[in-house]
Image 1 (cartoon, rainbow, N blue to C red):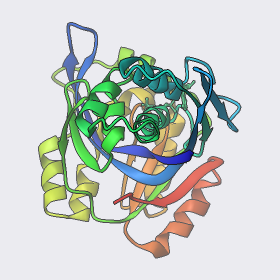
Image 2: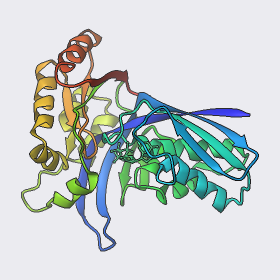
Image 3: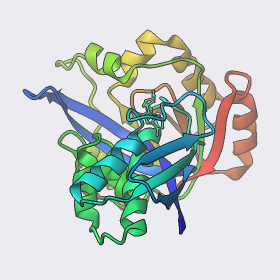
Image 4: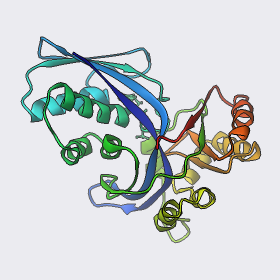
Length: 284
Ligand code: ATP
């Protein structure tokens, strides 16, 4: 039997870092939602007790460093599964982009193998497994829109934002998440975005307020390291996006756009800046 799972990309509507904890993790407050830009996973059982990963994307690891491999290994060990699995990752989400592509692949692997092997693991337990793989994985297990606190693993469901277009642009630069967090300094001058106000915007289903409350405390750090991300933000606003923000630690910048008539202009305008531009809908 072959099964398929969709692994969508996430964007942060807001991302705040409160402080660094004694265990080295950062205490965060993030509101995340999913967009209709997704990797597609194909999985089938192998007679031998082994995990094989393949992908058309030449630039991701296919060994135990791959998050889908780690997810398969974890679920096999925890539930004493002695059967093997072949997983093909059809990558569509740009890699190392701040869109949680790897985390979403890991979450899709957990969901898929739960089905393939009839393990009947509930979502909460899948999220707990996911937390062992990475801070964004628990959110990716169930998707939707959620407030994530703790190191990202404590989830509270939120209303989805009003439907809109999302234009995503990834400049051709590499951003190290570890470096961005390493260079982040939280002090009295830090401008914190507000999870409470973003939550209100979602509850009121106010697109204008969602755009107004977009905020990411990591933006300043990445913008200082890579001024081209700022240029991209400015270009997106100038081309008519209603709200613009960098996702995660970057470098992808997304723009929320309510009017379909504006999307082509923004998309085409951005193609002058970078090759990787996508115009998608929210996954609501
Ligand atoms: P986040 O927003 O969670 O920091 P990201 O979008 O910035 O994630 P990913 O696309 O998840 O970054 O990739 C980060 C690194 O993880 C890559 O450099 C890649 O080598 C590695 N990786 C491991 N497994 C995968 C996978 N299945 N897909 C993509 N990258 C993977």
